[in-house]
Length: 243
Image (cartoon, rainbow, N blue to C red; front, side, top):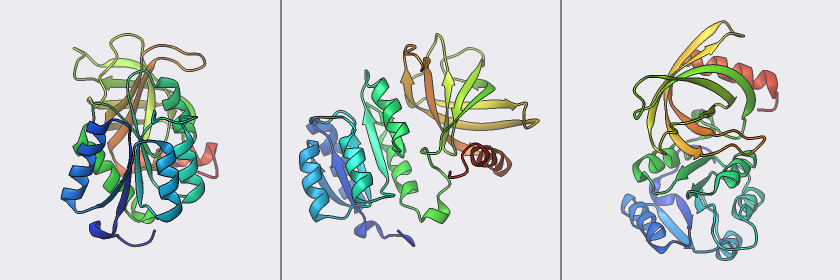
């Protein structure tokens, strides 16, 4: 997609078997002027893929059907580069990890913060050369981090286990944050001899260890300075030249 696309020319597919969630999103998107199609299962979504071209998909990760990742996989096969936003309910932790590894652009917990979701969707609709945010280029890392969570009385010192241009996964033991919590953080990047400061939003939480994955939370970056972005991009490209 090149150039900015007018809202009225932007077609969004909403896939969710929860009628209330689906209708809330449809009403909101239509009020904003977007074209909207809906499906309550992946088979209806597949049929729509055949006849329509979409600009973004918002899909529940657990819509009925044979396998939970099929909407994401079919979207990637039908329209490479199509932004896919997934919605998760509590209990979908392993599917969340799988979705990230298969290239989901963003993952939001339910109940939804619709304002933040729409902001993310609009960011994905920007031309590629204007869009810095991306989650599909994660690389493993071991960094000390100090995170300020709104429910904690003092900063939490812990580890970042992987990082991307768009966010990071922070290992946590007890006192897990809530989805949609806003946080600030300080990263001590000893290898690069630099300290990075930024802010973010908790997008999903893994409540317990499930080897090889540890309990913790996924944080989307909402602010990083240009130097901080540059350091992260350089590291990702060093570890994964195709990123």
